[in-house]
Length: 180
Image (cartoon, rainbow, N blue to C red; front, side, top):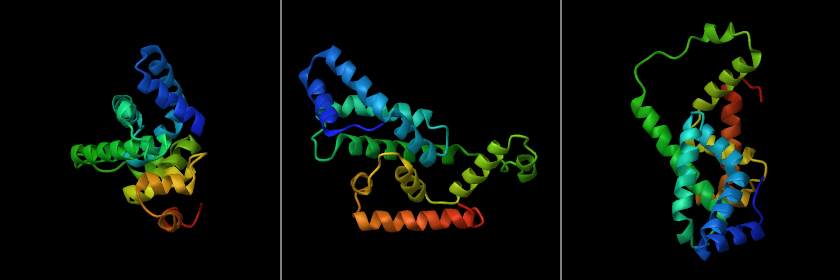
């Protein structure tokens, strides 16, 4: 689900009103509308289940929303926060990573749940992409993500977004052995 301009204006007005019940209802509306997309972005960028960066994102949004200047769409602003949060989570996980060996490929192949094996294969292929490429693919896969919104969230021109998405898809296809 996505937020339209009217919903964004209503949420911002509720936050700026100082009326706590209105603000709480507005935050709930914002969370319900964006939670799935933000979780997906966090999961793909952070390389985890996305729960921690999701919670950190919405905590940051709740705290900073009264100071939101409206220079971008509210949705775009939330995506930027989610992107930065997920990248921090990824860096933190990388620092904590031990020298343990990756999961044995044969163990994955013998897994009886074919869907799990395929998910592992795609996750491994996604891991070969840069954080930016994973983020672009995640944003491009979101139901209502427009190229203009992605460009604004990343702070790059629209043409650059499409070029980078094309490159990321090509690299993912290669990592999957030509299948996508």
